[in-house]
Image (cartoon, rainbow, N blue to C red; front, side, top):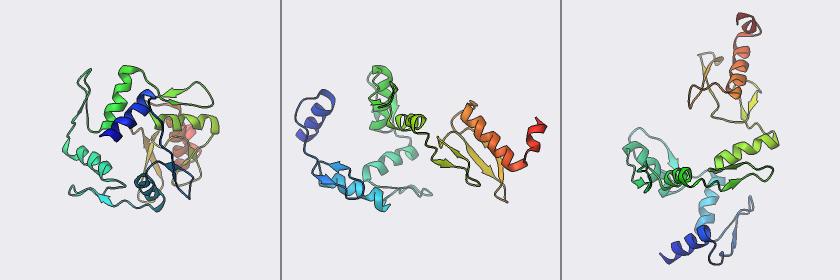
Length: 197
């Protein structure tokens, strides 16, 4: 318990001395304060996921037992992490931490290039692509690329051609979705698509 308290005091309040990061990954130079953390990290490189979900018909596997337990709660609907300010119930401690930032306004993930700040690491990672121009997500049928994998998903018919696009999160048609949707229409029906509208 003392270890957890020391981690909390250092991380949240800046009290204490950080432990030396003496365990370094030889593949990517990330370093860790504990050997077990390095061992878990190495599973990212090997692709090993030893903890399988035991829910019938589910085939997900995870690096850690705690990640598997968090996932398992999505099947059971258990939401045992409660917000003391509004009653929000989250399935994981991480979900509660993200939620609490709505109350506090905390945005701990900051861009090095501009004044952008975010409540989550994933939003910061996506934002950084504005500066780098990186477009890591590729259309499965051609070389078209886009910067955000959840912007749209595409559906194929039996021939593997582009068929239609829909937004995964909501029915909002943003510029990226429009761009990818138009691209897929062109790939499917050719330049005659433009004349049809």
